[in-house]
Amino acid sequence: MYDIIIVGAGPAGLTAAIYAARANKNVLALEALACGGQIINTTSIDNYPVAPHITGVEFGKTLQKQAEDLGVKIEYDEVTRIIPLDEGFRVESEDEEYNAKCVILASGTSPRKLKLQNEDALIGNGVSYCATCDGGFYKGKVVAVNGGGNSALHEALYLSDIAEKVYLIHRRGEFRADAALVDIIKTRGNIELVLNANITKLNGEQKLESIETDNGHTIKVDGLFISIGRTPNTANLVEGLALDDNYVKSSEDCTTNIPGLFVAGDVRTKALRQLVTATADGANAATAAINFLRK
Image (cartoon, one colour):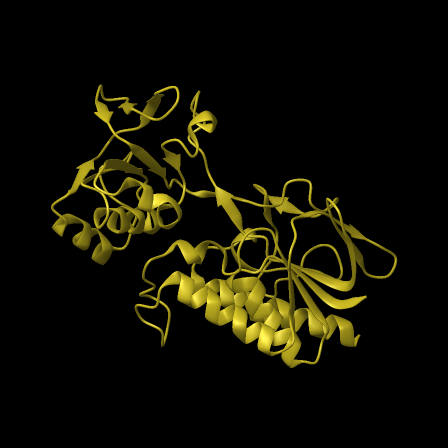
C-alpha cells in the first residue's frame, strides 16, 4: 500500500509528489497521457517566476526528473475509479488496482469540443486540439485556430512559424488573452483575425476542406485547431465527491468532502487556473495529505 497515490502527473500532481517525497512518503503518480500535463503544449512560458521563456516540454521534463530523483514512482495508466474504503482507497484502471492511505486528485482537464456534426470523424484528418502535437503536418498550408484565450493565441503564434497562413477565429470582438500576447499576434503578417464569428460547420468527408461561420463566411483550410476551453476530468471518478459544474469543490487547503481525498490543479474550483496556481495547489494538497497521515 502506498502512502499517497496522485492521479495525474501535470504541474499540480508532480509538485505534490515532490513535497510528499521530501516528507519521506511512499508516492505513486498515475498519468494517463504524458508527464507535464497540458503545459507541454505551450511553446514559451513567460509568466512563471524565475523561469522566463522556458518551453512547456522543458518544464514538464524537468519537473518529472525532479520528482523521480526523489524516489517518486510514475506509471502510465488511466484511472477509471477511486473507491474510498474503511481504511484508505482503492484506485482502479482498466487492468490494475492500486491501494493507498490517501489520494490526491490532480487529473486536470480535457479539450472542449465544438460539438459539430462531423467533428469527431475529422479528428486527425484536419481537426486537432494541439498545435505542438500536430502542427508539423501543416507546413506551408492554411490553418485556422478557434479561440480567444492565451492558449488559443499561443497556438496561433506557434502555427504562424509553420503554416503559410493562420486564421484566428474568435466569437467576440476582443480577446480574453493577455494584452502583450495580443500585441504580438497583431505583428504577425500571416495571421488574419476573424472576429465576432462562430464556426457552424466543418466541410469535408475524408479530410477537412473548409469551415463555415455564422456571419456567412466559408474559409478554405487544411487544418483547424480548436482551443475554446477545457472540461474537468472528474466524470464518474469518485462516488459522493462534491462537485460544482464538474469541478471538485475545494478551498485553498485542497481538501474535499471525502476524508483522505485531496485535490490540486485545474480540476478544482478556483478563480485562476495558471501554472503558478497549479504548483501552489500541489504544495497545499501534499501538505494536507501529510498532515492527514500523521493523524
